[in-house]
Length: 289
Image: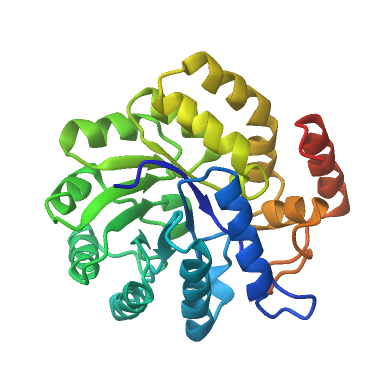
């Protein structure tokens, strides 16, 4: 169901920190033109922790309306409270989203049984669920055993893997029948080489055409073409991962291209001048500036 290239879309703000819905719609047009399979609004690049509940829903509604059925919308509606995740997911379903990205509940560190019950309850809402395994941000991994149990639910259809381990792709595909999407741009091609089906990408906010072409080449088993694109994009992938905390580098990159103002909500703040210069150099070398 969810195979291909998806952009973890930023939430653009005006200079005074309000959500710029008109600019958001324009960004989605660029994703459509770039050949992306879909978008994932209100994930990490969407600065979901700093959006209010009502803002969260409005971004999803704007995204669904702008996508207009041309590309898929997988709404970020996870939370560390099951009741909040249920409410957000129901609202996303009502808005017409195609699926939901469900991050591992963070901070409260539930047991594997707690994770199983949490994700199962959300899946009961009726939207196709992409599990999001990112222990570096949540302090809790979804074990392969728990993924396998969850795969028995008809609405749990995929896993976004951002644990930094290509081996988990093989382990999941060996254990159950779920689509595996890379959650790290730098590991997209390695993960697809062992059976992954695509990526939920950060870099595609600035390079949708290149990322979608790389993923499609891998899906078509045109591995030399995919590798050439990976090598071209690798410095960007690495810079976005290392220069600051997501979403600061990607919003800085988009600002360098004139796509959005370089505006954040605290506690996120602009990248350092030194790292901005590094990012600009990388983007120029990659042909993105």
